Image 1 (cartoon, rainbow, N blue to C red):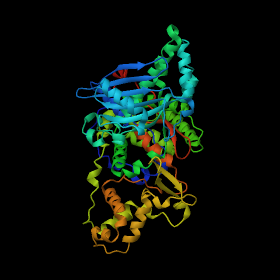
Image 2: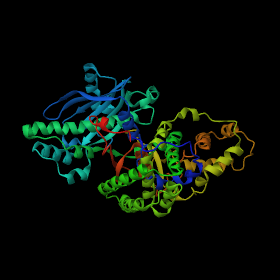
Image 3: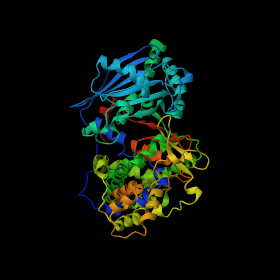
Image 4: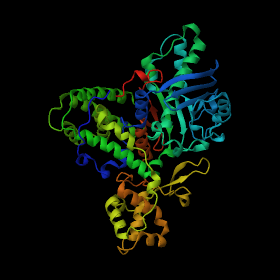
Length: 558
């Protein structure tokens, strides 16, 4: 339940962080999930509305091979995860995007599938890209087992006891997805076909629903195989252990360009989060219920940070910073004077000077938690009509355009793109899998096929063209003479009304870390336990600690 009621709309502008602070890679790469994250939005809706969940089909044999259907039914619509479990030889198991076989494959079906639908899907879903699905399907996904933990859980349950806590904590999931496709890929329904449905209006709701139901399937499959192996002595997972298991995910460069290519959507995500923080900071007082809740969630955050493991040289010091900051936050919350005027703003101001970037972004997440009634409505503002911003304004003058560049792109104009270190990389799309890749300009071919993802350089090149042009020249004339700047002009015109549209860093610099882009997006999904495996791909955990379909109704909307 909500712990506070919103006051009359406060003036929040003075409490909002500027884009120049928020949109830097180092800070974006320190992001944490919040109550506005997409999986939290989904769970609140499922718990708070009259959605019913069941498993009408379970046709899985003693080897753990077969199919199942998980159904979610609301007042107007039904969605069904159709899951296929496979007997995958170990030598074929791979998390790479070029894999051709998986331990399990899935689709989210729009409605209640008939036996004929399931037969059609059985011929196509296990093939993934090589198959074809229809507009009745909303997503296409696949997953592989965490082999050691999956086997350990089955053996333990079959023998009549629970798996070792250390083994569970070391991995945190029984399966990890290697792809969850939506938005029209491979024949699935387009986003525009479903965006008007209230339950799917927020970003990535069909993908989050797919993963949440996959989580239930992974546990059911392990318990089923344990029951087959152990017979009467087999037991089910302890509820606390079951809840501690999420769904793993391996995410690489394919996801990184998304937030660059969707500037209005990125702006709306960031604007919602920053407005939420500003609303909390603007509160004149703090209720005891909110303070108590804050002290509860910092303990949970500390436990999560202790369980969070990584050996990546970038992540190890970040984890050290986070753990130290969270300990400091726990101590500070216990002694903070929440009776002073504007206690939340004072707390935030203290945090900006006392905490690292990791700690500051964790504090943002913690401060939002007790304030659901104040901030949860902002989730409705996180989608975007990107077509509305596509049309260029040819009537804009070059003087106006130059002003936007000098003000909103000053960060880009300060970069010297004549130096090798500032143009060291290039983004391209692989011919084999049509996935984004990052090349080294000095040693690799392909720069002639470079994708326009370095907005900073595009803005710099546009500025060089318009710097000496007459102020009164219309943009239409500029683009007739220089059509190569069309994309950069559109970005500048979008930014005029969307201050958080651009990542304010050089995305082709030699020291740029793509994992910062990945973490930013994944935090908005609601991911935890970020574990970079290189500077270009990361493993995460989704829905760890969240309710399952069979117990979500016991949850509050808090």
